[in-house]
Image (cartoon, rainbow, N blue to C red; front, side, top):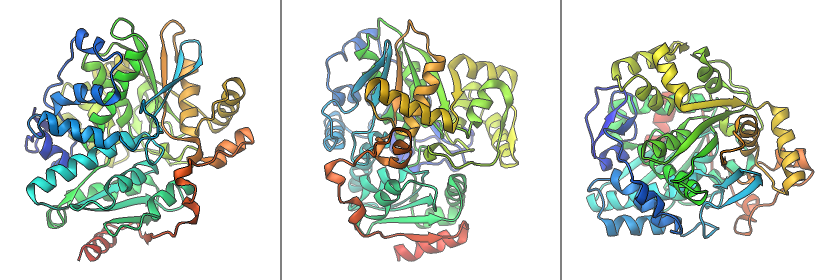
Length: 461
């Protein structure tokens, strides 16, 4: 299995190289050269299997000879052993043919744990074998950072620096990043929004002297390993609802397009997915683009679903690459135009995107109303991101086809929004009950590339 860049000029890499590299040297994102498929019998055989068994079947074709079968099974087992539910990704029914896929039973109560816990295990194994050490730098709108710090804290072969927008994450998200005491993890509060953090991250990767000097690696959703691990729960959910003999649809609340792109990969692998629905909050650039209005950046408006407060969705580049028939030059041109404010999608590529994805948005008021309504009708407490998904799913779904909405975070991560909607303040699980008593360790940094590089170099010295 080989990996190529969406911009067409970076070296072709193995799975291990692509995982450890993150962003391609031409600024693009790595994708598989080909997408392996699973037979109907292989998909049907997943019925009744554990999450770990399905994960091995789904991911094994992508990793080549990076790990032996026994090694990979062991890494998967270790990755999910700390989850708080034996099913790992259980489902609950919200209404006839509408289901909620709970992806918040990991150690940081968000869907990012599914990928990050496995990435941590794979990095440690690969780097330990080579006797190498890397510096991981990530940008987060909230959940990626805490999941990365939790996955890599205390590991021998990595130093981790997480950039998050100062004052624009929930208190629980912030404390999950700032309270770990291990010396190899660092939380950096950047004066700016998430798009600023993400831009500075890409600037660091494109500064090859710095990148090579500190052995930079990335675990944002630009990392193919992140997307791959998220493909698995599409299979477990769909099979539990009758796949491959029955089509299933999915609605995904998303800002960076990684989680919905994982659903696209599942579909390409042979999973019978009817609709992939992109759900956005008031920062609705993806919805506007998929409705044919072009991809043009606007101002980021802070919301009660802050992990989706994004205008530059990194993984959308992967979707564009396939929509433009894997023309790296075309994608590179679009990304150059994005740097100037935005771009329009060609008619053929737009049709390709609309054949694959539907979309919708939820306002702040609609999100709050959905949290309140679902609690009244089902007893479920939704985080605001999950509520965005449920609202859009209800607007979009075909009542004859099972719809699965991805619940991306535990409601306790956003207690103010949930309490405002329901009058109930959700509590943290017992293992995190002392989170607000733990001392914080954080550095505030200007939205400036040189300041960030200087801080990282000093911390590594």
